[in-house]
Image (cartoon, rainbow, N blue to C red):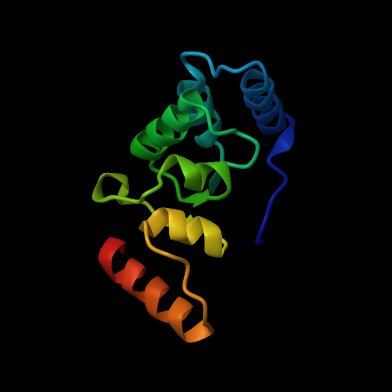
Length: 130
C-alpha cells in the first residue's frame, strides 16, 4: 500500500497548523502535537501550508530533529531548512521534493539549467547529505 488516508485526526492537526499560521503564529507545543500524531503514522509529510514565518520554520526544524519516522519534506518545509546544512541530517529516511527554485535555495547555488546539470547537482547533494 503506497499511501493511506491519515484519518481525521491528522487532518485536524494540519487544519490547526494552517489556521495558526494564518493568524501569524504556531503555538508552543505544536511540535509535540505533530510528533504525537506521527506515532500512528508510517511517514510524516512536513511543509505544505505551514507558511514561512519563524515559528513555522522552528516547527519544521524541531519535528525533523525529534521525529524517528521517515519524513517527506516539501514546499514550506524545504524553505525551513534552506540552505541545507549538516545540522539537518537525520538517521531516519528523509525525502526532499524540491523544484528547481527550491533546490537552488537548498544549495545556495543557481539552479542547474540542463538535465545533465540537474543530475550532477542532485547527485552531489545526495552524496554530501546522504
